Amino acid sequence: MKRMVLTLFIVLIALPLFGCSSKKKDLMALDSDAVFEEENIPYEINQITFSKSFQSMEPTVEIITNNNKLKLLASLGLAEYSGVNVNKIVKKGGEINIHVSGVSDNKASSLSVPQVSLEIKKSKLKDIKDLKFNIVYDDFTPVDVKISSNDVLNKIHSYLKVSTKGSPSINLIKSDNSIIWDISYNTIFDKADSNNSLVNLSAQVDANTGEIIKSEKSFISSPLDNGHILEFKENNYLLYKKSILDEENNNSYEQLWIYNVQKNEANMIYSSDSKILSAQFSPNLDFISLIESNDNCSELYIISRDDTKAYKVAFLENFNPSSMAWKNNTNLFIIENNGEESRVNDYNVESNQMNLVKQLNKNVEGLNIIDDKFLIFEKGKDEFNNKISVTTDWKKFVFIDDGFSPKFINNKTIAYLQKNEKKDINLLLIYDIEKEKITTKLNKNILNYEIFPNGKIMYVIKDSSNNYTLGSYSIENNSTENIANVINDKIFYDENSNIIYLNTILPFENNKSEVIYSIDLSKLN
Image 1: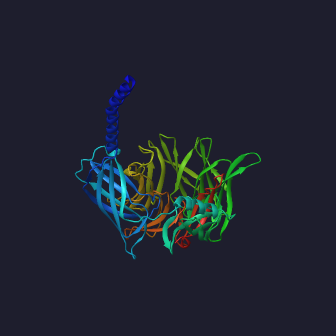
Image 2: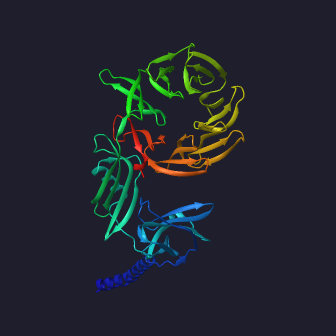
Image 3: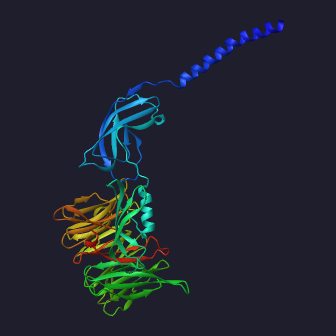
């Protein structure tokens, strides 16, 4: 009997305890399933764009803070709409939901990634980094593709045996019930061709199966020769050098070649164990001046184009030329530079006489000549821009600006490039010597340029995707024009034949030797 009473007593005591435990569990469950209140977030749309880069096609939200302003860039994912609406932005707990819908127009709609730039207004949002941002589709149907653009390009390169330095034109199109990657390349290397020809390529690939539906290669050019172009005289000659490795004794040497563009003939005119630094034609094309370097010493040679005989110019002890420029058909100006001082010499090829023009306390790196005006550039304060000056008597120097690659347009006007370090671009500037002011500024990333007698400047620009574009600027009309996509920054243009010459390193060869191509521009458009 006592045992039964004791058992009953224990049960009665335990019941409240179990009851308390059960209630506590229910409260915990209630807390975890708590319903957060929705808070409408005020906003203002700044811009809506429809991106066709297709690098990222997943919905994302990027947070941008600027001057205590909270801005968002919402990429809505791949879709086919002509417009989009942001219906509302709602905060729910630790999440921000951006509700969107699409606007369809059968004529204007195309595949793209809609992007909405907006600013959050008068919000009390705190700890933004701890919030989760979501894209909520109210009336918006995304388009799914299984094959990314990178996968498509890798497949094209592998299956069609091509190689390129730049980026293609990429588009997504609908064909019946399929989504198609539409790819086009301008000027790429055809690895399937033993000659390493340049071709244009167009291809279409199913975006979900990866099947190459069709492809077409169109021939542009075969290599003209191996080598590096030093100078081009329009409608006449191409001057270039070759680096040769003798595999038997592991010795290397360099050769100077001349290519006749009218006859399509190439001939070697000079060979040396030293490194060829530069070579230039005289204005009448009768002579070629050449500077070569060996063990920190340099030497000057003059080569007659008719008999290709070379003779060494050495009148002064420790003569060490660093740069040169022809003043006329017979006089060659030569700069010697020891890093602190410079000597300016005038050499006459007919009389075989060398005269010292001036010894300067300047670090002159090069010069340009027109009539009796000398455009010099000396070492500047930074690694990009030089100090540009003009002189007529080598006594008085008129400072122009800081820049590089200066050239005379005429005896009153010069052009030069200037590095803008903040924007990381090279501006092309035109300067009026008489008015002492800049008259034109091209805000493009220009890597190289050439001046033509008809008042045209040809240049090569580089974009953020490392693609090169050949363009032109008309001084008379103050207008620019993009001409063609090219594969290198250094272009030599023959306006009469509409042909460009360039050298480039094959991106798939281990020896990294340079190859010269001649390209008809009409085949690039």
